[in-house]
Length: 221
Image (tube, rainbow, N blue to C red; front, side, top):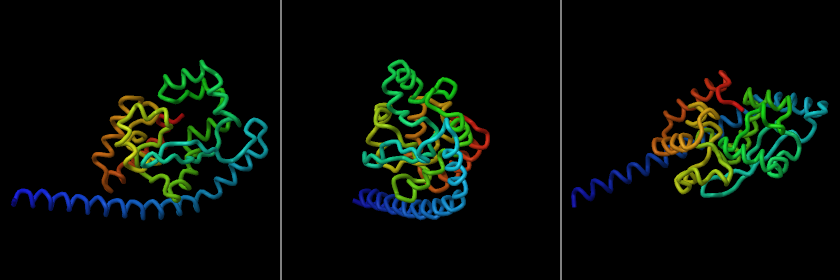
Protein backbone atom coordinates (compact mmCIF):
# COMPACT_ATOMS: atom_id res chain seq x y z
CA UNK A 1 0.00 0.00 0.00
CA UNK A 2 2.83 2.38 0.95
CA UNK A 3 4.69 1.55 -2.27
CA UNK A 4 1.50 2.13 -4.29
CA UNK A 5 1.00 5.56 -2.68
CA UNK A 6 4.62 6.46 -3.41
CA UNK A 7 4.23 5.58 -7.11
CA UNK A 8 0.96 7.55 -7.25
CA UNK A 9 2.59 10.61 -5.65
CA UNK A 10 5.48 10.44 -8.14
CA UNK A 11 3.01 10.32 -11.04
CA UNK A 12 1.18 13.37 -9.66
CA UNK A 13 4.48 15.25 -9.27
CA UNK A 14 5.52 14.40 -12.85
CA UNK A 15 2.12 15.51 -14.17
CA UNK A 16 2.37 18.83 -12.33
CA UNK A 17 5.92 19.36 -13.56
CA UNK A 18 4.86 18.64 -17.17
CA UNK A 19 1.85 20.97 -16.89
CA UNK A 20 4.05 23.77 -15.51
CA UNK A 21 6.54 23.20 -18.33
CA UNK A 22 3.79 23.47 -20.96
CA UNK A 23 2.43 26.69 -19.38
CA UNK A 24 5.89 28.28 -19.28
CA UNK A 25 6.58 27.07 -22.80
CA UNK A 26 3.41 28.71 -24.15
CA UNK A 27 4.15 32.02 -22.39
CA UNK A 28 7.69 31.91 -23.81
CA UNK A 29 6.30 31.18 -27.29
CA UNK A 30 3.93 34.14 -27.20
CA UNK A 31 6.50 36.63 -25.90
CA UNK A 32 9.26 35.55 -28.31
CA UNK A 33 6.97 35.40 -31.36
CA UNK A 34 5.59 38.89 -30.70
CA UNK A 35 9.10 40.31 -30.34
CA UNK A 36 10.33 38.42 -33.43
CA UNK A 37 7.41 39.57 -35.59
CA UNK A 38 7.95 43.19 -34.51
CA UNK A 39 11.71 43.11 -35.15
CA UNK A 40 11.35 41.28 -38.48
CA UNK A 41 8.71 43.61 -39.93
CA UNK A 42 11.31 45.39 -42.16
CA UNK A 43 12.24 41.98 -43.60
CA UNK A 44 8.63 41.46 -44.72
CA UNK A 45 8.75 44.82 -46.52
CA UNK A 46 12.08 44.06 -48.24
CA UNK A 47 10.98 40.59 -49.38
CA UNK A 48 7.66 42.02 -50.63
CA UNK A 49 9.48 44.72 -52.67
CA UNK A 50 11.81 42.13 -54.24
CA UNK A 51 8.84 39.89 -55.08
CA UNK A 52 6.97 42.84 -56.55
CA UNK A 53 9.71 43.93 -58.93
CA UNK A 54 11.43 40.62 -59.72
CA UNK A 55 10.09 38.93 -62.86
CA UNK A 56 11.39 35.49 -61.89
CA UNK A 57 10.07 35.67 -58.32
CA UNK A 58 6.81 37.53 -58.83
CA UNK A 59 3.86 36.19 -56.85
CA UNK A 60 2.43 36.00 -53.30
CA UNK A 61 4.70 37.00 -50.42
CA UNK A 62 3.85 33.99 -48.27
CA UNK A 63 3.56 30.30 -49.05
CA UNK A 64 1.38 28.02 -46.94
CA UNK A 65 2.00 24.27 -46.87
CA UNK A 66 -0.28 21.82 -45.06
CA UNK A 67 1.56 20.09 -42.21
CA UNK A 68 0.49 17.72 -39.43
CA UNK A 69 -0.09 19.36 -36.06
CA UNK A 70 -0.74 18.19 -32.52
CA UNK A 71 -3.38 15.44 -32.24
CA UNK A 72 -3.32 15.05 -36.02
CA UNK A 73 -4.86 18.46 -36.73
CA UNK A 74 -3.66 19.79 -40.06
CA UNK A 75 -2.56 23.42 -40.36
CA UNK A 76 -1.01 25.74 -42.92
CA UNK A 77 2.64 26.40 -42.10
CA UNK A 78 3.80 29.80 -43.35
CA UNK A 79 7.06 30.57 -45.13
CA UNK A 80 8.29 33.32 -47.39
CA UNK A 81 7.69 31.88 -50.85
CA UNK A 82 10.95 30.57 -52.28
CA UNK A 83 9.43 28.68 -55.22
CA UNK A 84 7.61 29.48 -58.41
CA UNK A 85 3.82 29.79 -58.22
CA UNK A 86 2.20 26.34 -58.55
CA UNK A 87 5.31 24.50 -57.30
CA UNK A 88 3.32 21.74 -55.54
CA UNK A 89 1.48 20.84 -58.72
CA UNK A 90 4.72 20.96 -60.71
CA UNK A 91 6.30 18.50 -58.27
CA UNK A 92 3.41 16.03 -58.17
CA UNK A 93 2.88 16.12 -61.94
CA UNK A 94 6.52 15.16 -62.58
CA UNK A 95 6.85 11.48 -61.61
CA UNK A 96 10.66 11.42 -61.81
CA UNK A 97 10.99 14.61 -59.78
CA UNK A 98 8.52 13.38 -57.14
CA UNK A 99 10.34 10.04 -56.87
CA UNK A 100 13.65 11.84 -56.20
CA UNK A 101 11.85 14.05 -53.67
CA UNK A 102 10.57 11.05 -51.67
CA UNK A 103 13.87 9.14 -51.91
CA UNK A 104 15.75 12.20 -50.63
CA UNK A 105 13.75 12.41 -47.39
CA UNK A 106 11.01 14.61 -48.91
CA UNK A 107 13.44 17.27 -50.09
CA UNK A 108 15.31 18.20 -53.24
CA UNK A 109 18.69 19.89 -53.30
CA UNK A 110 18.49 23.44 -54.69
CA UNK A 111 20.74 22.67 -57.65
CA UNK A 112 18.36 19.93 -58.83
CA UNK A 113 15.07 21.55 -57.87
CA UNK A 114 13.58 23.54 -60.78
CA UNK A 115 10.87 24.96 -58.54
CA UNK A 116 13.17 27.20 -56.45
CA UNK A 117 13.76 30.76 -57.65
CA UNK A 118 17.17 32.46 -57.51
CA UNK A 119 16.02 34.72 -54.66
CA UNK A 120 14.37 31.69 -53.06
CA UNK A 121 17.75 29.95 -52.81
CA UNK A 122 19.06 32.88 -50.80
CA UNK A 123 15.99 32.84 -48.54
CA UNK A 124 16.48 29.15 -47.82
CA UNK A 125 20.23 29.26 -47.36
CA UNK A 126 19.89 32.11 -44.87
CA UNK A 127 16.78 30.54 -43.25
CA UNK A 128 14.97 33.88 -43.73
CA UNK A 129 12.14 31.91 -45.38
CA UNK A 130 11.32 30.45 -41.93
CA UNK A 131 10.55 33.82 -40.28
CA UNK A 132 6.75 33.77 -40.98
CA UNK A 133 6.47 30.65 -38.79
CA UNK A 134 6.35 33.03 -35.83
CA UNK A 135 2.77 33.64 -37.02
CA UNK A 136 2.06 29.92 -36.53
CA UNK A 137 3.71 30.04 -33.11
CA UNK A 138 1.60 33.01 -32.03
CA UNK A 139 -1.56 31.27 -33.28
CA UNK A 140 -0.68 28.13 -31.32
CA UNK A 141 -0.26 25.83 -34.33
CA UNK A 142 3.41 25.40 -33.44
CA UNK A 143 5.83 25.98 -30.60
CA UNK A 144 9.22 27.66 -30.87
CA UNK A 145 10.83 24.31 -30.01
CA UNK A 146 9.52 20.86 -30.92
CA UNK A 147 9.68 18.16 -33.57
CA UNK A 148 9.68 19.62 -37.06
CA UNK A 149 6.13 19.60 -38.54
CA UNK A 150 5.87 16.98 -41.26
CA UNK A 151 3.66 16.45 -44.28
CA UNK A 152 1.16 13.60 -44.03
CA UNK A 153 3.25 11.24 -46.20
CA UNK A 154 6.12 11.46 -43.70
CA UNK A 155 4.11 10.10 -40.78
CA UNK A 156 5.01 6.54 -41.80
CA UNK A 157 8.60 7.30 -40.81
CA UNK A 158 7.57 7.89 -37.17
CA UNK A 159 5.68 6.52 -34.22
CA UNK A 160 2.86 8.80 -35.37
CA UNK A 161 0.90 8.62 -32.08
CA UNK A 162 3.94 9.83 -30.15
CA UNK A 163 4.94 12.46 -32.70
CA UNK A 164 1.45 13.98 -32.79
CA UNK A 165 1.14 14.03 -28.99
CA UNK A 166 3.12 17.30 -28.86
CA UNK A 167 3.11 20.55 -30.80
CA UNK A 168 5.54 20.69 -33.71
CA UNK A 169 8.26 23.31 -33.51
CA UNK A 170 9.97 25.91 -35.66
CA UNK A 171 13.25 24.77 -34.09
CA UNK A 172 14.08 21.27 -32.95
CA UNK A 173 16.74 18.80 -31.99
CA UNK A 174 16.87 17.55 -35.59
CA UNK A 175 17.71 21.02 -36.96
CA UNK A 176 20.33 21.53 -34.25
CA UNK A 177 21.82 18.15 -35.25
CA UNK A 178 22.33 19.03 -38.91
CA UNK A 179 18.90 19.65 -40.49
CA UNK A 180 18.69 18.31 -44.03
CA UNK A 181 22.03 16.55 -43.67
CA UNK A 182 20.31 14.10 -41.30
CA UNK A 183 17.78 11.84 -43.03
CA UNK A 184 15.42 9.08 -41.98
CA UNK A 185 15.43 6.94 -39.87
CA UNK A 186 17.97 8.93 -37.81
CA UNK A 187 15.82 12.05 -38.04
CA UNK A 188 12.84 10.23 -36.53
CA UNK A 189 14.99 8.83 -33.71
CA UNK A 190 16.25 12.34 -32.89
CA UNK A 191 12.71 13.78 -32.80
CA UNK A 192 11.49 10.92 -30.56
CA UNK A 193 14.42 11.52 -28.20
CA UNK A 194 13.33 15.15 -27.81
CA UNK A 195 9.76 14.14 -26.92
CA UNK A 196 11.07 11.74 -24.24
CA UNK A 197 13.41 14.30 -22.67
CA UNK A 198 11.62 17.64 -23.28
CA UNK A 199 12.20 20.33 -20.64
CA UNK A 200 12.88 24.08 -20.59
CA UNK A 201 16.66 23.75 -20.28
CA UNK A 202 16.77 21.40 -23.28
CA UNK A 203 14.60 23.85 -25.25
CA UNK A 204 17.08 26.67 -24.56
CA UNK A 205 19.99 24.46 -25.64
CA UNK A 206 18.13 23.59 -28.86
CA UNK A 207 17.46 27.27 -29.62
CA UNK A 208 21.17 28.01 -29.19
CA UNK A 209 22.09 25.00 -31.36
CA UNK A 210 19.70 26.13 -34.08
CA UNK A 211 21.20 29.62 -34.19
CA UNK A 212 24.65 28.05 -34.58
CA UNK A 213 23.35 25.88 -37.47
CA UNK A 214 21.70 28.91 -39.12
CA UNK A 215 24.85 31.01 -38.76
CA UNK A 216 26.92 28.24 -40.37
CA UNK A 217 24.28 27.55 -43.03
CA UNK A 218 24.45 23.90 -41.97
CA UNK A 219 21.98 21.63 -43.77
CA UNK A 220 19.87 24.49 -45.10
CA UNK A 221 18.11 23.77 -48.40
